[in-house]
Image (cartoon, rainbow over all chains, first blue to last red; front, side, top):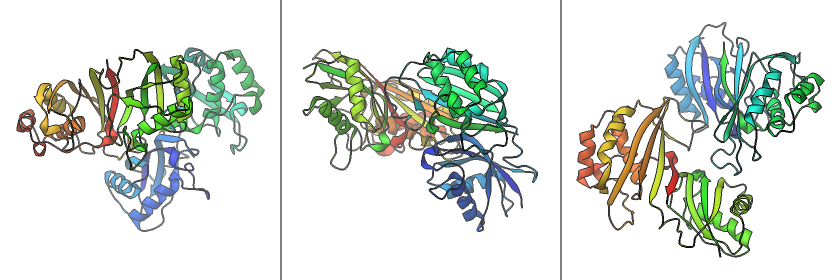
Length: 245
Length: 245
């Protein structure tokens, strides 16, 4: 059975997250059901990362073994036809060697976190960005973010329910920039702890508000204690933008 | 009673359009109810243009006379508090002279039409752009669009239910550009006929697909007959971006 690599876009608002749950409809279930209808048998779909409920994807990667040898473009179009009208789209499908595994072959995950920093509430970007009405200093956030670069024990930014064996991670990029009313935080690493990006963004907010300096952020990191960090930024601002192999 | 000019953003998906209707909830009703709760009496709100159901606004302008003399920023924040959780936001509110009228003082309307020209269906931009999967030549569309510039009888692009006294309009801008997968059409005029922008975009699609030349578009314009034009592009791609006074 040929293996296909699928690149996915989805609006996380409508789902309980990537992974199948008993309490609602997941992106995984949507894709497995679409593939099942295409192939007339149960199909398992594995993703690079388990995005939480409300988290969006512009470039999630998954793989599936299909019992039909179809050109990638046919697989993409057929899955999209079976996914309608759900807000999940297969951007591309390509045949890959059986050694490829969406999760275990991945060497880099890339995320974008969108903050909308304006006085008025969000209308068109409701559920698509974190609304922070008070003024944020994006340059101060960008400068402080450098404290978190490199290899550290990220326990301060780790959710209590995180199942990773170790709190050590290597953060390769954490850049902050302003685009008009939007502040974009780009994070890149081989892998992240559960809620790590959202906890880093929630903590950087304190720096943006002028309540914390970069030195405060360093002390929080070194405390290796979740209670030393800032709030968990909401899921709606987070986008999985790509996975590197 | 001071008059306030309100600049509005909204997601048109949730509404039957700007104007109050018997068959659903309108943006006008949302704002009038929010203003009514703020002022404890019925308030009328008038807009520059009556956007259709599903049409979005990034810069709709409206005015209202309020029986309380409040700073503009207070009016903005209080209306936004009363609008929650609807996808309508007051971006700014400022006191204007009583001679100001959102509709009759307007000398320019600006619209953006977003086409998403890619093979995969839309997930994050569902209801926010027109999905056209077949390849479009944006340069050919841009070149042909110049045919429509200036003062013409736009009957070919006018909805049957249009209530304007004359089909003559002066189109000051109709530019087409590609940004990756997106094709943006920007239209600017003192005023537009009903469905004029959507009918022009639907007709330009024929040019983008290579089915029509600029000369075909000119013949369609000169026919002054709706049946000579192309389809009406869907509401979800249209954004009222601004109003000039």
